[in-house]
Image (cartoon, rainbow, N blue to C red):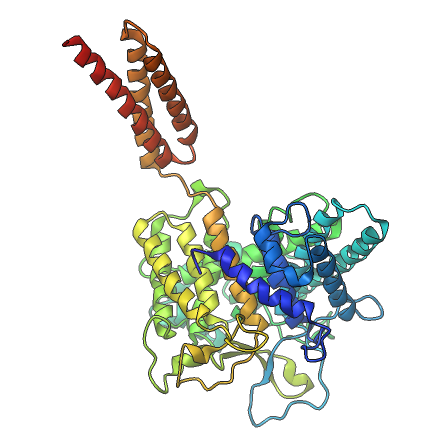
Length: 602
């Protein structure tokens, strides 16, 4: 999983392409399936890696790699693949757009919270933050695909078809970005309230009784309070922030937040850790992809919305990171599980995910976080893998197995206004943990921490890859947890595009970690500079002292000069390579010096 992301992804694409090519067969799953989130996850599995991983694009027939052509062969040849993908995407946007041109979103796998309640007789059109977030990722991927393909085709009919697809993707992107803005909320409460006591129990060692630390916490959160107060929605959905004695929480609710000015929305104004992480994972695609930053991909309205979402993303990750790392001793995050709600290990994973978002916000390798901030994350991720019975053996009746099946149900406060209270079923603990592990491995300069994270990623990868379906048209996709927990989870397994899409995200992160330049080591850079300086000096001395030039000596010195030049060029980015090259130059210079000394002795 961690060493061969490209090959793993192409194996997955083979199955995906066969399913797409046979979507009209009588025995095939319905396409579109009347679930916009599920179908979006399926398309993201194909289009997102093509946007983010080098060498996997297929929009340009002349540059599509032979291994990509082989994997996507069921969709056609090098010209047929982009045509088929265009049609499949067009079918998706047509199916999930109403007659007024408004995009339609769905909620995902919802469950009734109380088993005694029966599902409502008429289904309400729930729209969740997960559907908005995946819509951002899908729309950006489609826009990048259309942009590249438009530059390669000349047929008028094809260009018109692409223009329609671009318009549909852009409209869906705008609606999803607006919906994410409307789903962001700050919840203000007293330290003596139930919410206040829960927060303080999670953050302070002595809980609400420690008034001195409470004042320190309020002071640390003050800049975030000021930032939230400056949002355009502060007068409606973010009330009460001006009282500095009150605690608050911020992030994304499960859907568009119901407020006095927006009474038609469904979600109660309560931040949810799960949906905050889901929103942040989608928003980060707006400013972390090279294709997204190209001029013309986003229109003026979308650029303005992107700035609003970036501000909310920044405030949310700073808030939760401040809570997770509060104090001078051990981080509150290390006291597993994170308090609040059901105290599930999912909550710890969500908070750790936000902290990792916070540490990844630097774009320059020289600005990587210090190692004392990564050491607690290394310990937390390793502990979560053990508690989830991924790196430790599961016993009969082990409650930790429930993280993987049937999973956790995240409540959707406010759905009870339309019938029984509902929740979203979540089963992606293992791939999300693997994704965060790879991200921490890419951040650290400490060899021990990096080795620990890569070793953990290997175990997590084996676990995730072992959960593939092994029979039927979806063989090779996910999810079959009974394969790694035999006797503890009852089959049969079911095809899950949610799990499959999460694995694709893991492969993209793994490929990004391999493609990215490592942060140069200062110690190696100093060593390289010293070795190059010594080699330059010896080279000049050799040129000065040689009495009778020969063709062989001239050729050797010319080679030494070339090696030294290469070493000097590599020193700023790859000091280890520069050291090796300087060592080779020094070795050759020493051989010339030794030969001259031997000749002088006769």
